[in-house]
Length: 260
Length: 260
DNA sequence: TAGTCCGCAATGGTGACATGATTCACCTGC
DNA sequence: GCAGGTGAATCATGTCACCATTGCGGACTA
Image 1 (cartoon, chains in turn orange, brown, red, blue):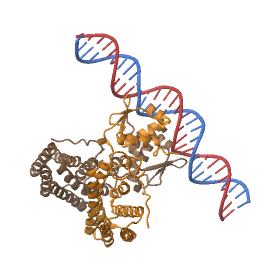
Image 2 (image 1 turned 180 degrees about the horizontal axis):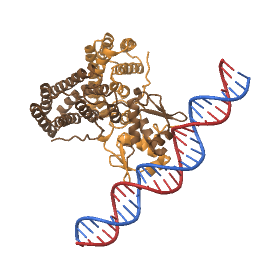
Image 3 (image 1 turned 60 degrees about the vertical axis):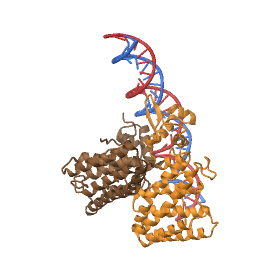
Image 4 (image 1 turned 45 degrees about the vertical axis):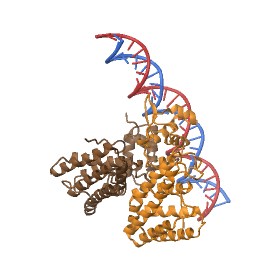
């Protein structure tokens, strides 16, 4: 059943390498892989080929399959991101990703203000309204709030008019869910964040590019601040998330989060 | 000899799909691929697996290998970018990439100002000085100027302290060389650009994060303006670059451009 | 006409084999 | 004693034949 892309071989090996359990320079062989996972050499070869395409390993005759250093990895690939987010160093990874968000999302908001469809504009203000309702209600449903948050950012990125920004939608959703599930979110949303989200929605709906960019910059700056405050004080997050909470399985594709 | 990653099968198929020659929904078979390229089914399978990992195709029993829509592609992958940059729609692709630069590079400059090594700071000011010398000399060596430009941006991205930004170094170098080779550069560099590059170098060297960010934003805004001016007036660039100018072969890895 | 069933065509996966390249070790020659 | 070349061992690479699995699609039936 595993369609070779979701082969346990690929997944396990990828996680081992990105986690550092298999350090750079470590050598594997197809026979070894096949023996360990109980698969034939062909499937081991294909998994290895995928890993090679991700820049995690290089293979050559007589030398076997050597693990490459992290500076050779395709760190922008969704799979690599998911693996690293599931291993140690997740906080550092989260910080890098947040910085990327900080760079991209304001510009995406600007683009969305110029090009979003009417349906998207409507949905954005509806989401913002619902978020405010949930936030002001106090002990609201964290999961629903998260889903709305994700949905909003995905809508903005996908409506930005730039496919490269849209391609980051999956990454952003992983970051958002990771942030809450790692306990890096305040117990209930800050009023500032609520205001900023509402401002983004309204600005996009009104087609005000500058305001949308500014408001989105506010959102992600606030996020970054929270992450820095937590991350610098403790390497390990306060919440229960040592290594058994995979944060999120996959991220690519049409990110399954739906909302009103 | 081709190590399967650089297999002509993978390359040709990737280019055909990204160029639209094989539209979404088109169906391939392993036997067909093997027959066309004169390879066995196994190697065709591995190439197909790579393509599947890039999100270009999906394969299933009885259905064969179906080409996916461009919204499923890993558009951030260096190979996909290179393929699309070599086919039609290169101008649109260049615009998307430039917008991504616009988002990322200012923040990268900020990071570099905070964390670049002494050697990098020195090299940056040396590069800026040389660029000014070349630019003011008038009919200077375009290729050397381009190499310096690329080197500078790569240094900044790699010194930004964010591996995700560093991963975009290859992409940026492709964009830069594409820009000049497509005839989207002024015959000799604008004084404004020269000033901005010098300002970036000096700000990074001085550790002035805000100034570095501002100057880099100036650079990339100017770039964007030039691209929009050319791109909106004519879909096809003025230069001779219909479809036989591959712009640049590969982009990933340690981008081969060296300079003093 | 609608629903079910079966066949087929394609991938998915396995094992064995030949090939080619690279590294290591040994061996010769100066 | 040392350097350089030659050989062999070892691994990936490529190929082939084979069986299992799986969905699509047409045919058959009620």
